[in-house]
Amino acid sequence: MVSVSADAAMRRAIELAARGLGSTSPNPVVGCVLLDADGELVGEGFHAYAGGPHAEIVALAQAGARARGGTAVVTLEPCDHTGRTGPCTGALIRAGVARVVIGVGDPNLVASGGAETLRAAGVEVEIGVRAAEVEAGNIAWLTAVRRGRPYVIWKYASTLDGRSAAADGTSMWITSEAARMDVHALRGTVDAVIAGVGTVIADDPRLTARNLRDGSLAIRQPLRVVVDSSGRTPADARVRDGAARTWVVTTADLGANKDDRVDLEALLAELYQRGVRAALLEGGPTLAGAFLALGLVDKVIGYVAPKLLGAGPAALADAGPRTISEVIDLDFVDITQVGPDLRITALPRKREG
Image (cartoon, rainbow, N blue to C red; front, side, top):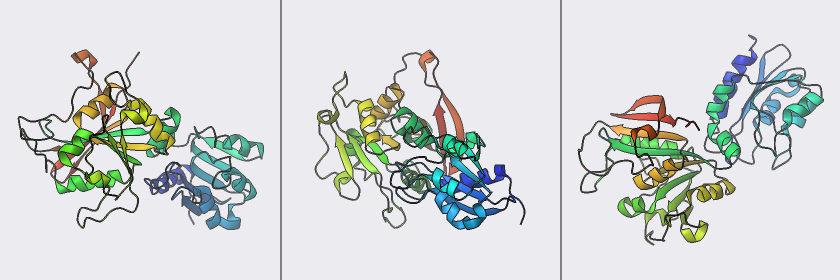
């Protein structure tokens, strides 16, 4: 067999890790590739679900005795604690792995320290291989653990002139079926979907992850979160249909901000405690503006239809800026055509000062 370099193995480990997106939370996505002493690939694995075997354990099981004297290439620093599963450091040491190549260190203080444990056992450790790519593939979990709040993606759909609905309030459908299917796939990668009570009353959305062709529900459903300061969510709203867990959040639950509305920072802190690491903010424009004004949005995904309305509500309400110098700058990271629509992905630029 052709020898596989650690760099190429890390590329493969990143691909493997992506297979766990949407099913591992509150754990990270992790991929691992094992090379034997001659550099041949003898095992690979990824973390498939919370409570299941870690990527290193799956790869070691495939490699068997050929792991001895070999190299483990893993996207995230191997864990060094006992939770629902044992420490991966111990498994690597017992298997006789001579070298461990790591993409990024583990920011979780409970599980970190794996590199030091491995070095103390005589294992050669290298950290930082393809770190930027590893970070990008695990950005939601890494950001959440570092900040103690979920990674928030604001998703919106609008016409080319920025309208989220017509002047009479109708909005079905601004974007195409292809774009809507893309959104349902996106819902399947997060732990919670957040919407405001205004959107629930106006549109009565389900906020579930579904296959639009047959209406079937995805096996794993994100928590539905309705931000409803005064408890106006109708008893027969579809978000209460039992298809997924739902939390209608009022000021009585978390306290109010200066405007007597739900404290959004407290909301995110509570969601983190409930195991939410990635959240999709879906509506409406007022709630999105409040999140942006507080700097709580980590990624923006806009589905823009090649349509013009000229009137009607905008996709975004007041987000804080009062003059052009206060504008919220974004950096485009991807622009892709989905059916007739454009999906634009952008990251808020860090503000100085």
